Amino acid sequence: MRLFLVGLIAAGAAAAVAARTAPNERASFVTTLGRDTVVIESFTRSNNHIDGDIVVRVPGTVLCHYSADLAKDGSATKTVVDIKPLGTTDVKAQKISTTYEDGAAKITLEMPGQDPKMGIKMLDKNGFPFFMTGFGASYGLYSSLGMYEMFLPRVTSKVNDTTAVKSIDMASANMGTRTFVRRSPTQVAVDYFGVGYTDLTVDANGQITGADATHATTEKTVTSRADYIDAGKLASTYAAADKAGHGIGAASPNKVQRGTLAGQQIMVTFGSPKKRGRDILGNVVPYDRVWRTGANEATVLDLGHDAMIGGAAVPAGTYSLWTLPAKGGTVTLIINKQHGQWGTDYDPAQDLVRVPMQVTTASSPQEDFNIAVTGSGNADELRMSWDTFVWTVPITAK
Image (tube, rainbow, N blue to C red; front, top):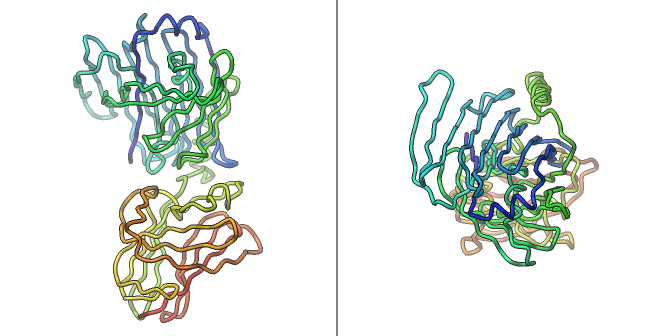
């Protein structure tokens, strides 16, 4: 289990924050992945305090309560994160309380059945806590928009200018940097682990009305502002659905498919995203760009025998698989010598071969992305399918 709760930054423009932030605010944000609601955040805040709940439904229901107290200069004086797994055993319950004073963070970690652990870390005096949460492969699933709103008055108002901020991780007090880019008077982009951006829409009052992570992140979520929702009550409802077998589960569970070639094993390991009511080709799977061909870590092909794939020689070994679907309808399979990396870390310099795939259309949509090895054992086929697309390439023993 990997959990990232990423912290807020600060700096001395508290007067601007007080002038431009509503003195009291109560609202919620609803985040969807296709047709499924995956996160709900509800918060109440004033100029110097925020208190909120985030219900995360992937891989099962987890209720995260957070709060932050701010001094008059806008710096953090205390933060709390309380994580309660309600519908999953894959996440550990824990509470992280941090006080900030004299350039140091004093951290207390509490876990059920264990004595509290305490620690101190030195900080940049301009640090301000942000909050990001997610579990397992979806470790970047959601950033607290209520906390982003507290910082937005400090973001440059000049279009195309960037505001780089020092951040404090609320779970560990580690320092980092977050980047905000003013795209337009009503659009602000926030960096996503330094490899992409989530696009925020902001109204004239400085309130976030929505967030779109579909264009430049791997999470593909959309968030909308809503009237205040009782997140704790919803968390109980979602947890009951988990226990009844009707929860969302992992966003893209990892799968392993096996076959044989000339008596030797072929194995493909991949993350399997779901359709969730979305348009796939040209949307979730982009045209004319190399696709990760699944989710999570890069898709891996293990060959126990030298093979011919699509007419190209591929020695026995381990490779990553990528695809390049074109808007004109063709698809290219890329076999890459690098493996074990995350599914966005494609290096074309490591390509072994590129071969064309045969493209057909299924009669009905398929919910889960799948890769299979099928055939007689000496002349097989690698088959990729999702929604209504079916891509195949022959594999034969060399």
